[in-house]
Length: 123
Image 1 (tube, rainbow, N blue to C red):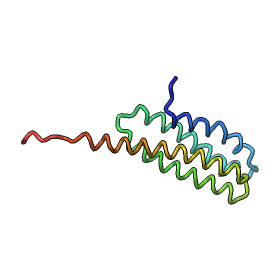
Image 2: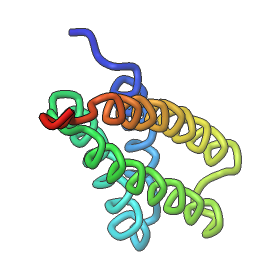
Image 3: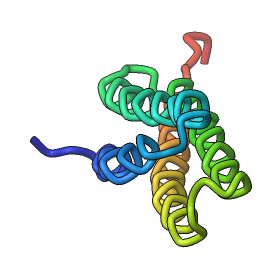
Image 4: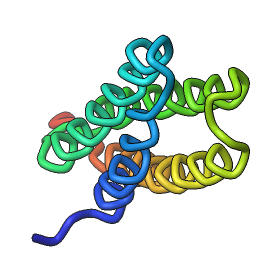
């Protein structure tokens, strides 16, 4: 199966990140850890759905917002001293890579949408 690079990057992020989130202290694991895990899975699901959607742009813009939420939630882990700086930096690097791909996909969809200009029958 040939995945889009953004889908593979998100998959790899989940494989790396979820075991870390599962080791958070109990009081943070069930709130912040579960929220991040859920957002990660929702991001992967959304990317796969967008891949096959006719109208991708709205879906992709929603996913861009979800990605930003993940960035802030990850920063909270650092600020609450729940992960080491190195892990935070690595997570942000992975999230930023996904963000770059997502931004490119959004830009591509916007340019495609502008190319489809309805023509009038009254020319």
